[in-house]
Length: 109
Image 1 (cartoon, rainbow, N blue to C red):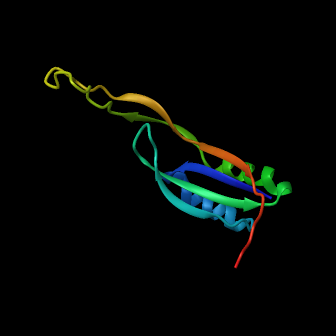
Image 2 (image 1 turned 135 degrees about the vertical axis):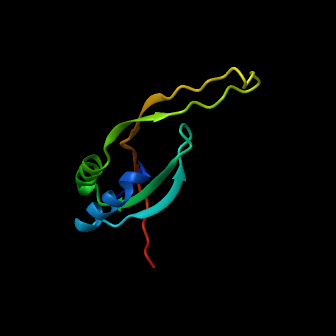
């Protein structure tokens, strides 16, 4: 058995949850916040049998798209904020960060 932990952007989380449910995979959703952009993410924990890992990974890949987004950089600490003019920077967001972990034991009560 495996535990798949997928961190996805909030924009993709509902579509991914629906796709997983449609194929009979259960997931627990947790709200999380990204460290780089400080924006909302959703972390899904999906327990599955070893032979279904590739299918789950495929569903995640199909439903979590990467895209470009303009963000305003944070003002420098300790610098003169009067002369700082933040120009938007284009960064890649979305997609999914996925961890596949072995499960030693599973109980459901």
